[in-house]
Image 1 (cartoon, helix red, strand yellow):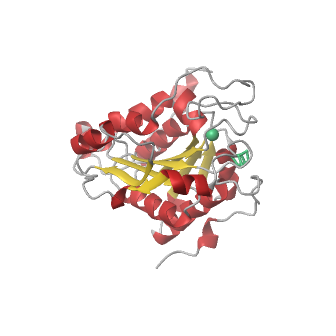
Image 2 (cartoon, helix red, strand yellow):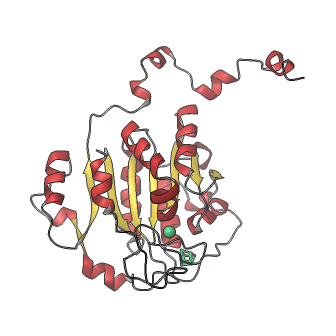
Image 3 (cartoon, rainbow, N blue to C red):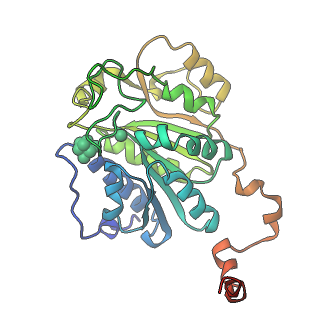
Length: 290
Ligand code: SF4
Ligand code: MG
């Protein structure tokens, strides 16, 4: 039976703009945790700087707000220290695809057993709408009235090129699909990357629910698509000629060991690192610094 969703609430009220996709993302995450009966006291969520980061105050789990782009290494550290916890990294497109890009690459390649939620609202929103790598070219942004000078990055192809074991693309305007996908991501053994196209009516006004509906297609409606086979997935996207955004679970590969399971020397340990460090007194060590 699902846990009462109120268990995940705090006394703080969100200050996001009306219509912001963060509301539904936040609610979908709480619903997923509640449906999976994961206690708030067994959950750690790392946030970084960005509008998404304000969520840290409004969820009654262990939460930590770190530097911009750094929520993934925080999550990795927490996960490796205590694998009894459900660990989630919550990050925006600016932090994830700029400052934190290396962390995304290594998290996927290492296959840490964490879930990464990427709020892709196609701009640096907290700092008043600067261009990120996912902002459409030619769109006037703060400080760039003629649009960004860089070329775009195809995020789907980029993430797929890293051989993820779980990659999904969803939309903040579809809370049902979002919550279902987060649940499946949490349950997946390995690094789950969930990119959420997020409504930001303040700085991404053109990204409306209608626009998204007309430009997206649920991947499960594509008959020949095989989400369990990376070669087939790569072949499908390399042949893609349309500009459709495919949603749903794009990639789910079973049988790849996680980073921790690849650590041979840890196999003899039944404990977690957090328990082990408690067994050592550092008093003698500290004496060296007196
Ligand atoms: Fe949400 Fe955009 Fe407002 Fe930030 S600026 S709170 S992302 S709508
Ligand atoms: Mg952003």
